[in-house]
Image 1 (cartoon, helix red, strand yellow):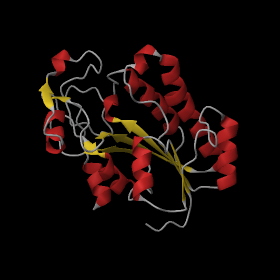
Image 2 (tube, one colour):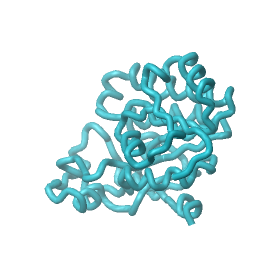
Image 3 (tube, helix red, strand yellow):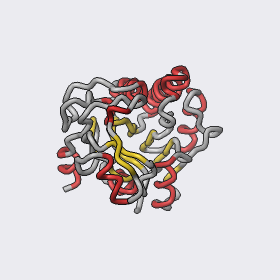
Image 4 (cartoon, helix red, strand yellow):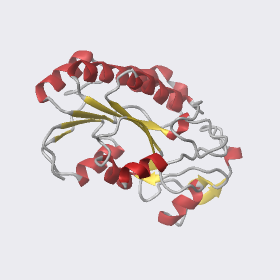
Length: 238
């Protein structure tokens, strides 16, 4: 991949950031650590961006797992996913840097998919609410792209998976392939794979996984269909 401009990627030490580092070897891709760019400090963000002058910032930094932390420590969830993202938006707006923000398919109600980007949203758990809080800030800045993603590690790492709900998981490696093809897009975009149950998806790469019912789920509180319509993505990739 040839780049003639710099891209800053926050959260580079995370799961997806590590995939990007491994796949794309370019001096134009910058992965600041928390000391270099602290998303909770406006000055830290602003100083790093002014020094490095990127054209695009891909915002991966935030809090996801363990999911229960968003219930048990809402201050941490708010700080990292809402306030931290808002700080990033403020700085990108001031410095006129394109912002790409990773959100989640869990912001859709989950009762009757597949959901289009323009469909009404209603987060299904605290994690999704925190990501929607970030979306609200990003939406104020028009030179931005919100990616509502349903991705996971390969091979499927969980020992159990729901067999009675619809979603459209995609592996992180596949999202890495897509990401640099849509840097020019603005607005909101769903990213996912084939619509199927998590169990059916996971079984392909992990034959040991066991099926479970969402009726026994007390943490995620998922509804029967969190799948997304990805036709808009397909149109951009044609």
